[in-house]
Length: 266
Image (cartoon, rainbow, N blue to C red; front, side, top):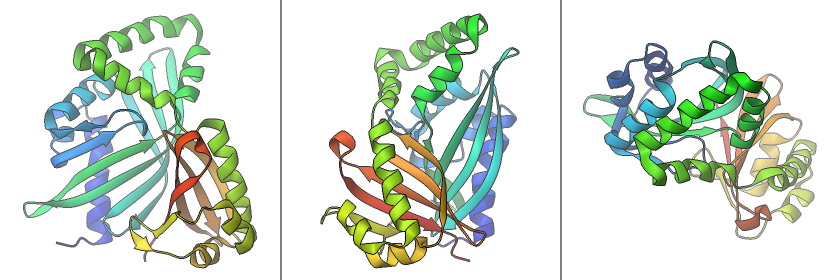
């Protein structure tokens, strides 16, 4: 079953609607059987309805989340959403979190469901922002820690903490240099930065050559670089057309193992 752009966007939009309405059953029910949530990318994924409901109870149910959407990119059955999350942790503590969300949509019965949701945002930066909120953040942090342990146990808490690691600053420096070369249209410099084994894709898995990637990015400007887990994500803007590049890095953030370029197919 294939879906139109409008059908894909309508399916994805149900997620912030259900979260905003604090509709637990509605939000969990959006996911296909065996669906998963990785939020943030780098933390342990939550797979299946029971784990996804525990994720909801921990991170969504106790707070108000506003989705400030910038742009949606549809590629195949995947939607990439460039946005900022406004998370009201308490009346005195509100977080602003730059993010990219990747939704994979799959058939569910006669309709559509979410097979995977990946949220790319920086957990260390969020913790720093939280700490700067001062004494008002202390009881909020204690409640979050208690909810994490209550809903997911020590293993789940450790799984969430894994989101602290990954590409980090070194990975962002590596990808910033690559983006500069891509936007300058310097195919030789781009090839030097990539290993022979780097997989380059248009969207999730469409084959794309290095020269094809350079052609798509040449003349663009890049923005909003985010390191999440072993991935670094950036937005691209050329002549008013938007794209998103997801770079997956190898161990130690020294090599790019995969590049995925997402651009609207319409």
